[in-house]
Length: 322
Image (cartoon, rainbow, N blue to C red; front, side):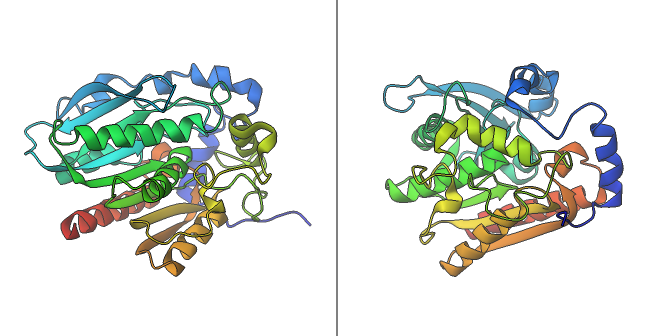
């Protein structure tokens, strides 16, 4: 019997049809080089700075032992008072594409509206730099951000890790690393449609073929690039594939959201449920009819607007309480 999934939101479905005329939902290893050359990843300063409302600064911090320095892109609202919260951001791209200039998920809007500093980390990409390079780069970047927090006008005690897709998975892994390596203590984690599990155990990990924006084949491409022959086996750390973690106690307040029509749906729902069972304050949203990354592709759609407002509201509550 063919696998089924919930229907797409009609407004988003119309947008997706246009997207598929230019971008395939099925990515193979042969597509990586061409995708990396896509102009979408060359984000101009005007967009990053919101036409001058944000200051841009490039910093470098020590990388993992024996590895190059890690680059950090700092975006700070003009005139922001010292002691601002910090949103430490990891970009998406399936572990194989993207850079620290591809800041999505409305994060820059939060910076302007809420008064926060965004620090976007540049991590090495697979397959040239397989696991554990990406997750260790992200953790090293967090350590550097914490150390430089006061210097950039931020509060080292009010850091929220966030990211979308692969970046969401990396954010979850960084939160586990911060817990297990003794810090820094995080205020929260906001992980959007996170890529958490290399094992392909859930129905949603196997039900999209040539559909959506990141189908089963694309997911296989990303995990294979990162892990090679280890994918799906026993020799994969919980920091690289956080869905493998059995102990989620002691993690910071969490927000997880995901579309109902995407590969990561079930692993994200399960992760949120297990966070709650571990006593972690957690908010979960499954956006009906949403495909992977729908809010970035169709930001003006009604569902995208709701998702963005909901995330922003959670950030505001978290910062008000913290």
